[in-house]
Length: 134
Length: 205
Image 1: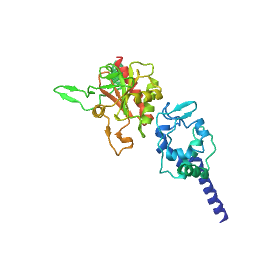
Image 2: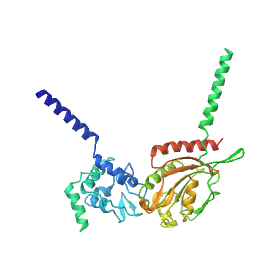
Image 3: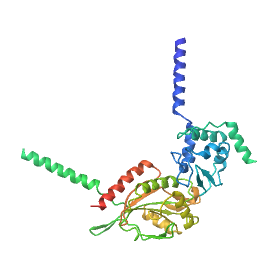
Image 4: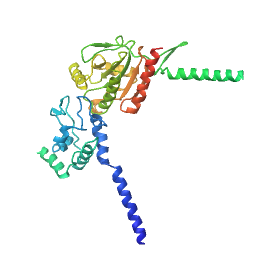
């Protein structure tokens, strides 16, 4: 009987490990592909001076605290990313996203395309969105 | 023995003929008119639009050029950035080849003025000699889109206010549609670039 339990727990842990390996922020990836990829592209490099890159972007590294609210409410300001000015048009916001979904998107962006930015904290994500509302 | 050699020779000749005719010529797309014995291939109607540098672009200007066309608008929130990225890929590939020109028709005649298209071109880092962004006129772009076997309609319900598809269309120097692909799908564009090469070979015959 003990043996059976051990075997079952072994299989379950195998399942968990393989799933974790395959699904690197799968929810964030799914949302990125649906909402962000049209402009920021599948390689995260954006397009010319029209849409800024998310891969190896100094702006992304330096503005982690306002990232949740940019995703939620959009961005109208002119920004400079890696020395290039982006002012062609505003980014639209995705108001229907929940803080958890936004957190998942940031997890995906921060760890993809060679990015190695620390993962966001859900409390900070909620705070970033709340402070903008007021 | 001689029979065998003739047989093999004939087989090879047949094979080469087939191979040649299939690989060096693209089909003529669209609805053709049949006039007695002659088939009149579908052709792009006359058009005349201004590009980002205020230059007039017409069928006449594009005569004897291979050109790649698409329909877009600068504020498009959905598929345009993807298709324009693929257009840029074609642009970069044929940057030095003056026999190939790119033409993007804006379907947003409210917002995409010539200065807006100029800013867009600057941001995309493209030359107006090699890639024309054409400003739309009400009704005319929609009309010409049909000739390009494309869809470009005003629709309040669609994201950004316009309904359109992301096709890239390949035209020969005579205004015939010879190939198209889904500009949102990079693998579809891979195949499309092979078609451009085929059409180039056809013109060199």
